[in-house]
Amino acid sequence: KVVVKQLFDKLMQKVFYTSIKHDFTEVTEKWGKTEEVNEELEEAKGYYAILKTTVEKRDAAYGTTLVSVIDGGFSEIETAVKNNDLLSFNLGKQVVDKTLMKTFYLATGALPNGYATKTAAEAGKDAALAKVEQAEGWAFFQSLSSYMNKNAPEEAALIEKQFNLESDVKAIDPAGVNKAFVRGFAKTAISEYGESKELFGEDKAVITGLEGALFIDIIGEDIKTLLGEDAYKTLTEKAQKYVETAKAKDKAAGEAQLNELISTLNTIVEKAK
Image (cartoon, rainbow, N blue to C red; front, top):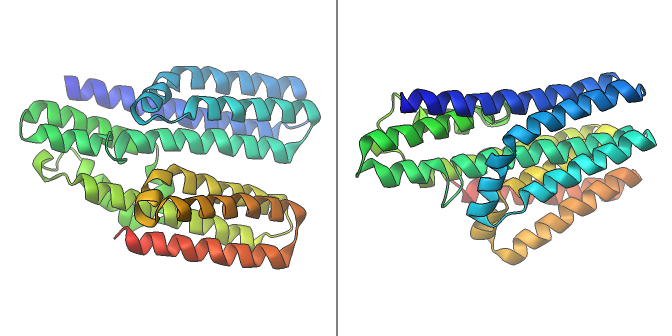
């Protein structure tokens, strides 16, 4: 019963998360009709209010500031609607979306407080409780699996197998799950930057450029462990600078920056094996 309760609870969180994404899509479709757009935004904020305790728990566990980042994203969205600035709406939307993804990652595969670690720690002591924690990890991962499957299918399959309730809780490998997530998100960032390169000069290049930066942020602590604080700081600065370059449509500078970003991300993928 306890396992089923957790599956229901965490899969409902996926429903609320995907409902927010759906509302954002509706905003884009209804752009320019201020009243209808505001209705969709209110709905999205209502769904987020249900998820907020999950975000607060991760902030408490990791010392992060996810709640204030999401609040900032919604604030940017509201300003964008007032100013009829679709690009700013899309950027604010990405901040909300990817910060929720970071929340789900911190809950599942991040060290040291993700459910992979909790399950492994409990497996030798209380197998029934470990099964509950494995179920929570699996259900939280469902909010991330479609993105991961698209950009890093091998990593997605590894994580899915580790959390799957048919798998032995004693066989769960927190470090293996963590590294798979790091590779998966790094590959996703590479994919976003590849798209940005193709669409350079369009608004979509700026949006995918920001997505790349946000995926780097999701695994920020892991990158610090793999490459060191200084290298991570340099990487995030380059990622931010690229967003500005994409906005300015400076193709030569953009191409050079993208090559550097992709090269560093490939190094992260290799180091996280």
